[in-house]
Length: 156
Length: 466
Image (cartoon, rainbow over all chains, first blue to last red; front, side):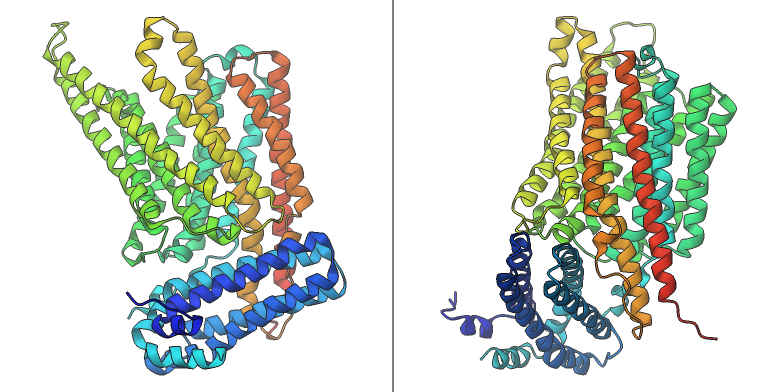
């Protein structure tokens, strides 16, 4: 059995599904951390926590939109299929991210809570589609090694 | 590669599941009214007209109603089974179900045989039509965490309906199907364990991790537990076939003959099987409680209270059933059949109200806001130039309201337990009935408000292309 010593080595030996699913959990955890903090009403901490999440989240989207989806589209020839749906859902989630930012600015805890909850559920159902269908298909049809090394270059 | 498996567009219009959801509380309110005018003597027997009308109003009018509505949503979206012309199918299934339940509860209450006959036929049409449509799309079902449980739940519904039909025929004319009432328990078992429990399990596998951000149910549970339960039900039915066969071919002249001994042997096996069924079923609530406790989100969510209440009641109900089976010979020995009946009623109330009704209510409070938002979101994809009118799904049913609903629900449940435990008094019955009426009217109001909000917001996303 190989054992990975650094995250980057781990990145090299894994497939798209495993890595991207792991990244989903990472984003979830960051969002949960923010959500659990809302009740404290400590808006400075909240802003910082939100920034951590939003950065991770946007990075995940970028990997998908600039590396994974194009590779998928190229390999399968399907442009207006699942990747198009995923892209439009990304746009919707970005608009929810923006709404949370506005709620933080307005220091409106209730709105913060509600939109975060909505975003959380949207993320979960979006992730399910990706993890159960899109990623396994990407592993099957694209050059996994090449895609993974491109992803790696964005982490460096 | 099969891209049609991605059924993002297969979602039915909001009106399809909602039609079922909004009708369900109406039947419980009607049951509440029946209880309000009932006298307490009518509660002492399962077979009084009030009790029969009440149990059918709850199981068919509320539970079956919501479950069918949920399937219209779950089948295409979660497992890829498209229901052809969903709007029309839903209208037909729903209309006959409403006629059926109204006729059945009314017929049982006022003892009108004609109404019962019409009701049974309507119910059969509703379910047969639904099942035909569903089986048409069955081959397209894709493998997901829920597909095993949902497939088996639907097959169980089919078996429940067929046994129900034979039971009705036998009741109309016993010479058609002799002594078929021997199948009553098998029919109930397929309905409650096969259909209700497996469907609840299937839906939970999908929505517990999604709504509450818990880890997934493990594979062995989501795949093999439903299968194990289903196989046990099949073996139980096989034993029932043997018992039935021995009974109708048995000689009526020899009091102690081989037939009776055979039957007792089979019945013992059936009892053992019921025992193992209860134990396997217990894995589900235990694991769900475990998952919910491992939830990372600390934010208040009233629907989790409903989940926890339902799952704890599940363990309670199963324990009473275990007690009934294990202690059966003992109870007979001390000749305490009254205690046994009391325990049966307690187990029944606990299972139907404590578990199923609690869970369905909790799910409705979570799913309806989600569907309002999801349907708006799907419309928004088509009109991206407009602003998404709902970014906070908690606006559909506010947290304050769901909390208030739970605080009404809990005393209602406790009062029902008190009645089931044998505290019969006129005023206890009236207060319980009032709680039921108030709670479900409030729930109905929330659902109607959600629908009005949806209509208002959806109209903002309509493209005016004139």
